[in-house]
Image (cartoon, rainbow, N blue to C red; front, side, top):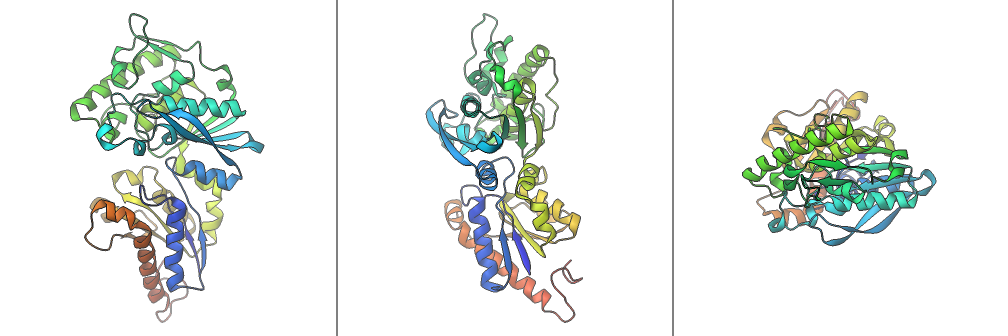
Length: 391
């Protein structure tokens, strides 16, 4: 039996590689003869850079940058020299997990550090950029990132705006004459894990603002400020980006790249699955284990388990999904091809303990699923996991 373990990271608990390893340990406890293949995945958020660099044989370059609060920090650029390819996670510079909960304020956080990572990639000689847009602490429509690349955002008096999304309500003019010239010659692919537009009820501010520290009042303020940004920028650049799926990713960084560069946007899970050759691995598998920290309403919008399930469905390979938290609505409406969604927390626990015990809990859950699979396969008349009893 061949089982492919292809999870995303379980945020604040396990990297994707650690999750794949935990699944593999659980499987081998029950099925020691199984051919287990570990394939860590990502969807444009945390882990995208490390996954692609490992697959493509590159290196991680550490770069001084600014975090979302404007403090000195260190980010990472994945560099694949023989392809002149750089891989960047915006969360490496301005990630939400780097900002303590009590300091999160989506009105003032800046994406400037993301622009510093792009600058570092260009200085390395990058001709191709893959930008992972997940996990930011910002809601500034990429203004900070663009400022780091030479664009000026001015008010009615010609003064530069303050950092953060709230001050965009005062935006009157954009001066892009200082935008790095060589940026136009670089192929940019945005790896995006959401399909949200920039504005409105499904936009950056209203959907993601609260987790970044925005109160209900601040959410409305930010949506209005980003509307002002779109009005001014779209007129200045001669493009319409506000309604493009993914424009609202990373607090509007998707819209910024689309408006000021020749970037293309693609589901991050597809970018990573292509890079690791997952279609070939899935095609030769009997079963797929995948998972992520939380299965909720956003999971169906480009997250790893749903992407894996769609790919596996094409070749008729069953999928089991593991998660630290499973929303009732998701559990009641599993996508085609998913045989089960398995919560990994075994008993009553607080969040810190659940996160710390994640690898152990996932290993146990994978072992339990393997026992159930063994029971199914061992039934009279069953022949492998693709028999009628399982598939």
